[in-house]
Length: 138
Image (cartoon, rainbow, N blue to C red; front, top):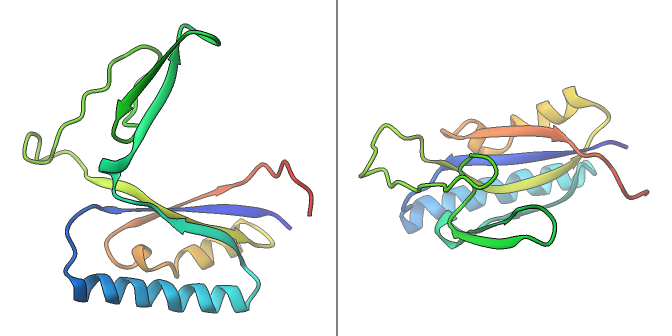
């Protein structure tokens, strides 16, 4: 059965303990329902983007390994990626990858239907759904 990655993007910010509890309750409810249907093949929540480190090798295989604090923000090759905070650029979108589910679904339509039930889909975020290549066999 095909597997789809449901990548969860949401605005990163400080949630109150009550807000965080409500978010987690919504995810637990989704996980239980999707798990009971045999849809969830895996998933994780990610720590804040300020804990990310981006790695690339400049000059091809065997070249200089470069580590950049923070998430990947775009760009190509050896371009230096400049991070800006919302205070420095308030118009910049601050949605970040916050987690993912791996969904075992018959087809894209079913995956999209499940993705629409992930809390961020209806709570100010976005869910990007991508089919996985499937290097391993079941």
